[in-house]
View (spheres, helix red, strand yellow):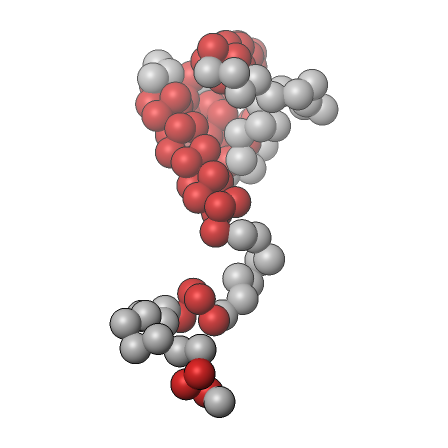
Amino acid sequence: MLFEYWQPDEVLRLEDVMPVADGSTPEEAGSARAMRQLMTTILADLPTSWRRAPLLCRVEALSPAAAAQVLGTGDDELGHWLMNADVFLKARLGDLGLAPEAAGEPADFVE
C-alpha cells in the first residue's frame, strides 16, 4: 500500500513533509523575503544619516536619546532625520504602489 502512490522518480524533500513552524505558506515566506529585499534596497538609497536614524530607532529599538548619542547628534536633528526618512520611504513605496496604510506612528512599516 505504501508504494501504491509513490513514484520512484519523485524526490521527497523535508519541506514537503514538515509543517512550517510559523504556519505561513511558502508563498507568504517568499513574499516576505522579497519585501525585505525591497526595503533593504530602498534603505540603501537613503543618505547615511537618514538611514541610520530609523534603523537604530525602529529596527534596533533604541530610544531617541540613545540613538542620538550613538549618532553624535542632538534629539532635534535626529527627529528631522527620522521625519525625512519617513517621507522618503513612504514616497518610494508609494511610487511602487506599496504605500503603507495609515500608520499609528511614523515608519512603523519598517520592521
